[in-house]
Length: 122
Image 1 (spheres, one colour):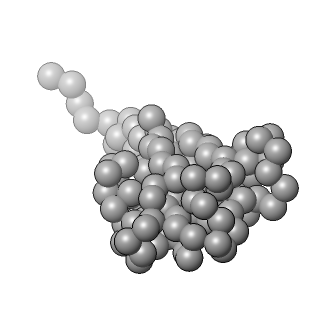
Image 2: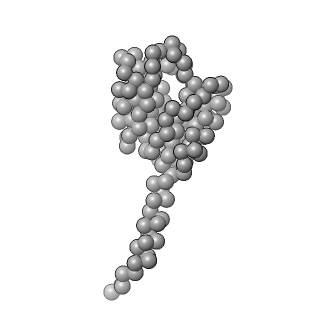
Image 3: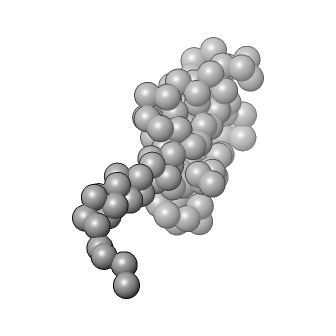
């Protein structure tokens, strides 16, 4: 029979959060009031260790598509979504893409809102 060694348990607990820490994402957009939401520029980044890294990567992705006025609108763990209409926008995060999209559409609050972008960490 193996004897329980407390330091092994502590070591396992210290390692367990590492996988979860790789679950930060961000969405950056270049979108304007009165613009068709399908014309919105965006960048999305997933699987980063920090919100700062995810935000920087989303901004870089947005700007790499020749968008000039990119702003981070959401950082998230698991899944995130951005919805927009010509009159507003909404963001949402959740454990599933579908739930994040529903939250973004609800926050957008306009019958003409569409999901512009959504994604989940792997």
